[in-house]
Length: 248
Length: 245
Image 1: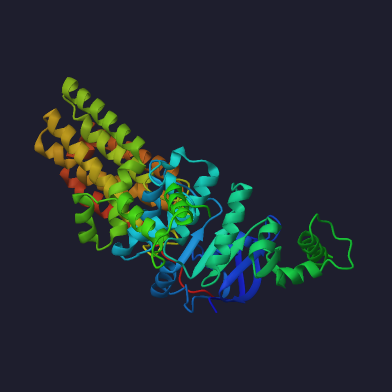
Image 2: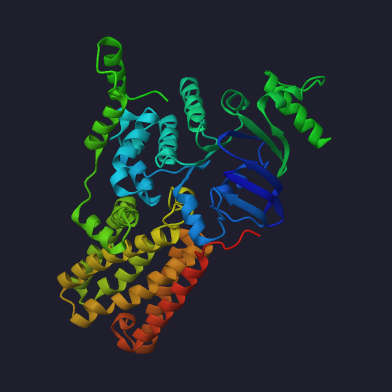
């Protein structure tokens, strides 16, 4: 298992953002759904080793992120796109991706080829030497994805990765996710239910810090059967049905 | 995702004409692109990489001035004004300005709300604390170089030329500690400027000279002790979380 989480909680003052989450997952694309404030971002940030849990146990790639040496090993094999990904406007696309490849402690001899491959993979080859300040929001999002995949991560965490992408780019991005999910654990937090339906093999639905559903997209869709749950697509109706049941 | 122009040309070539079946033109293109886009580190970056034993830290070090271009320009302007004031009045204003502008730069060197990629940096194998330290080192080094140049140009006495480096160290440490504890560059700037104003004014009251804060060498142990305390605070406030339960 690449991700093993047991009774994980995270508090910010009196607010319990993540309340006793337990999950295990191996390679594949794992969708994390939920309304605003459900705790998705806090859960991803703990998995990205950016913040520590308040309580509970977490093991990533078979290692304990609470130990300095093991956390460093996890981070070398981790890819992360935060919800609010910032940029250095004066950097070019290649410089930005290379900078984070070096901070991931990739062997310097491999960096140039890996950077070129990542930039090409997200379709930014023709913008490789462009300054980041000249790029559109969707292109910047793809730069963020490029830095996340540059080290060929075994654990890839993406927080709202398709925000700002146009429909054509989103379709291509889902294909990229499916490809990455062949070998790595890809965890995608998103509001867009159709992204989950198209790309994810497993899905978890969070509400008020807890996981209220975990299964396949087909199983989530089936939850809407026999209910009057709102939604334009079957998966959306399943999403609404589970949330209604959890809150009732 | 969709490929760039180069890859598209390769795909078009694959569709158009025959080629050896065992040649992956996509991989060939990436290899070419890697060489074309390859950035060659300068001498300073290569030296820093050897000294720090980390190409990532070396890159963080040498890119700091470009990330904080506004600070570099502001520093040069302030020190130039100090140089002119020193030349016209005879009072070593450069020595008074240099620590303050360095403190401002240090406060903006790194951290949430200041570094655009702070959260991403926190997930990197090279620890964010190390990045913070090399950024602070870069800011301090650039300020020291600019300040020394301005002091030398103003013709100040050697003691004054070098004397402000010690209070600058203390003031930078104060700004860094305040910025990291409060997680706000503005708080760091305020603490640094307030601390320096109090120090300069109290030096004037005690010794009757505005520049006593930088010329009185008996204050150096106090400055260094204060800098050590602030450094300890920085280390504590940037500690990595231990344990998961």
